[in-house]
Image 1 (cartoon, rainbow, N blue to C red):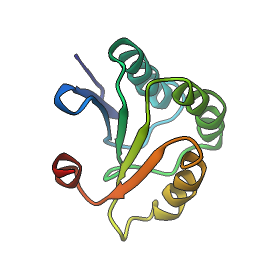
Image 2: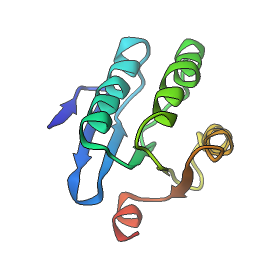
Image 3: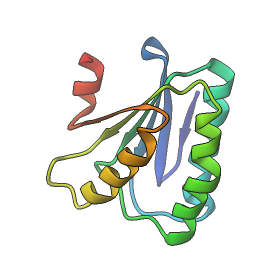
Amino acid sequence: MIYNTIYCKIQHLKEKNTILCQWKQFCKGDDYRNPFKYAMQEIEKHNITTWITDTTHGFKNEEADTKWLLEVLVPSMINSSITKVVFIIANDSPLMDEIKEQEVALKKYFEVNLVESLDAVKKG
C-alpha cells in the first residue's frame, strides 16, 4: 500500500523491511503530520525496522511541526520496531545542519545513517 499526496509519498519496501518517506514540497500542519501517522501505522502493522526519509525535496519545518515531531513522532518511533533511521541528503543540502541536529538526537535510540541517494541505501 502507498500513501501519496502532492506533498509526500510513503512506501513500504517489503524486501528491505523499510518505510520510505519521500518529501515532494513544503507543507505544514496535517499535510506534514498525516504522512508520518500513516507511516507509523504501517510500521506497527508490519514490524518495520528501518525508516528512510528522502530530503532531496525537503524543507525547513514550521516550528509547530518540529515540536510535534519531537513530542509525538519520535517517542512513537522509540516505542516501535524501528532500529535504524536513514536520511537521503546531498552533502551541499541547505537542510544539512538541521538533519545533523536530528542525527545527534536520534542516535541515542537508533542507528542513524546519512547517504546521498536511494541507490546507496538499496546497495547497503
